[in-house]
Image 1 (tube, one colour):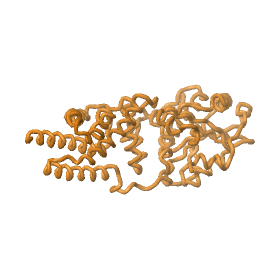
Image 2: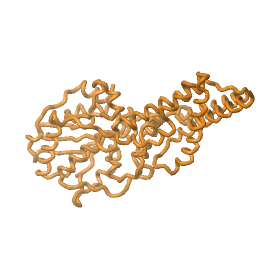
Image 3: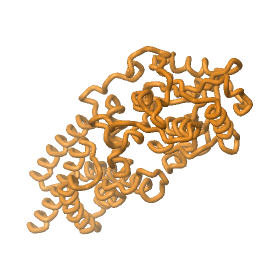
Image 4: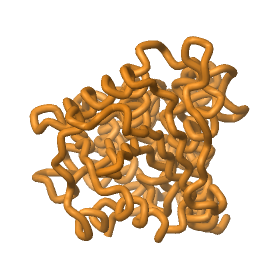
Length: 391
C-alpha cells in the first residue's frame, strides 16, 4: 500500500478557505520529507505547512490515484496527472514518521501582505478546476510547485548560490545518486529517458529533488534577505534511514547481463564449432531487444514525456530487432535475416564508436547487452556465409 493510500485511508482531505484565514496569525513552512523505500519516493517529498490558531494543514502537490482508469498506459504516455490536496498536518506527518523518514521544516520569512498573497494562491490551487496538474518528473513536481508558490508570494525570484554537488550536475546524475540502491530502477530510467536529462543544470533545477531542496533552502535568498527564518528538524533520523539496503552486486543489472554475455560467448563458440545457429537463443535475445525497442519507440514518438526524445538508444533497440526473432524460423527468410544482421552489426559498431560524442549518458549495464547483440550478429553472418560457401 502506498504512503498516499495509507494517508487517504486514515484521514479525509480538508476543504477549507485559506483566503479567509487572518494573515497575521499564519505561519507558512516548506517541509521536506527525505527518501522513502518505494521507487517513487527515492528523491523524497515536499509539502507546505500552513499553521494558524485554528488550523494546522499540509498542502501536498504529490497525490495521485493508481486506481484511475488506464493509469499505467496514461503514465507511460506522459499523461501523469497529479493533484494538490490539503490534509490535517499531524496524520499526514505521522505517515512519514512511521516510515522512519527524516522530516525538516523551514518556516518562510513572509510579511503579512506576502502571507495574504500566499493564502490566495494556495486557495486558488485547491479549487476543483485547478487542483489537477500535469506532472513533470524534473520540472513540475511536488517540490518545484511549492517552491514556485512561495516565490510568487514573496514577489521576487529566489536565489540559490552555488552549483549542484559533484556527480549531480545533470538530472540523470542526480537520479543515479538517489537511486544508487535501486540499480534496476535506474536501468529502466536510463533505457526510457533520452538526452533531455543529460544537460548541465543549475542549483535551482537540482531542487527538483526534495532532498536537494532541503539542503539548500536555508541558504537561499530573495532580494538579499533569507527566504526562511529557521530550520526545524521534526523527525531527526538519518537522511537514508527509510530506504532499502543496496542490491547485492550479483543481482545488479551489470552482473546479470555480464553473466548473459558469458553465456552468449560460450554458446557462440559452440555454434561456430558446429556451424549451426542456436535459433532459440537468438529468438529470445532479439525478441527481448525488439520488445524494449517497441517501448522506446512508443516513448519517443507517442509519449508526451518531455525527456524521452531524442533517445539515441533507438538506434540500437528498435522494433526492427524483431526481424531475426521471428524470421529466423523461416528458411525462405534467411537472406532477410542475414541482411538485417549485416546492417545491425555495422550500426552497432558505429554507435559504440560514436557514443562518447553523443549528448546522452549510458548505463554501464548496456555494454554487455550491446556486446551480446554484436556477437550474435557477427556469428550469424559468419556461420551463414561459411555454410553457403561450402555448399
